[in-house]
Length: 188
Image (cartoon, rainbow, N blue to C red; front, top):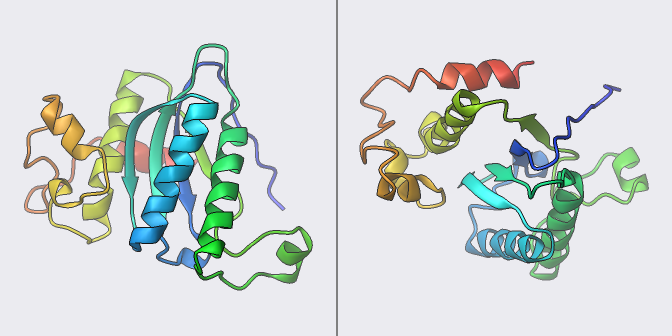
């Protein structure tokens, strides 16, 4: 089994990817999106973090958080978010994916893939590349032609702030060059 190592920087900024078990489209459902939003807001009120950028796709999400100064405990936050979402999803009649016997022995439920991907943001260039990756992701997956057409992301907030032109990342144009930086990070 791989030896997973996480990097902890108090007050750091982190890029995360979390995936539904079996790549089930649990966030393609209004109930699933609502429950995830509720779990994120509940955790944020208990253990603060800033959401820098986010995109929610049918079977996974990407998000960048900045933690408060002196705080590096993002695993606790994700554990609480995934736990709350799982309980409420199952109570609402949401489906579970089949588990391997070892997963069942560990008390897992078939809602989330175990673990999550984390990348510690190193600098401004790295941050911009990951924000671009997040906002381009619905186009990359063929869900929309332009990032602006995907309603479950922070893209519109960035357009309003003047960080993107409204047509940025449309499929009619070449993908942003910054995406190559993120793809290289994810392969490390």
